[in-house]
Length: 115
Image 1: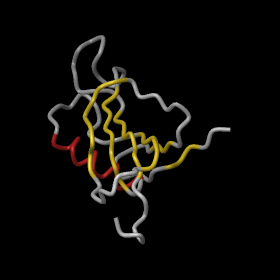
Image 2 (image 1 turned 90 degrees about the horizontal axis):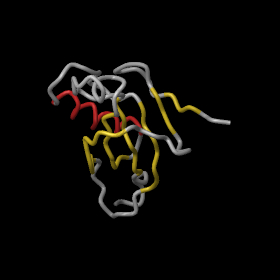
Image 3 (image 1 turned 90 degrees about the vertical axis):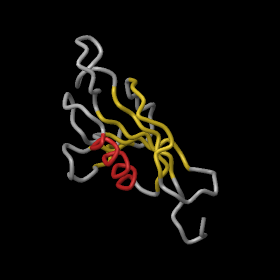
Image 4 (image 1 turned 135 degrees about the horizontal axis):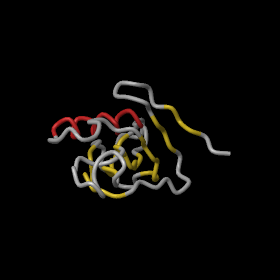
């Protein structure tokens, strides 16, 4: 990584719910669709995931990410933004990390500050 480049961060990018039509575990109230992403910004992380979600079949839930949690700083020397893991289906928990939300595809990301 070039010294002038911003540091890479690790984000969990979340789409609420999943595309399963199972009554008890699918849809917008089921476990969430999550991705582990290495990127320089919230916007870059969201763009990578939204591109992946757009290629996935299904129409039960939105095809865009709605939440992003900052997990930490990447210590590797890799400089490429990319999805490291996902999609994986689980309930997304914030665990006190910095977090951003948006109301719709193309809407701005807003950091939420907890007191």
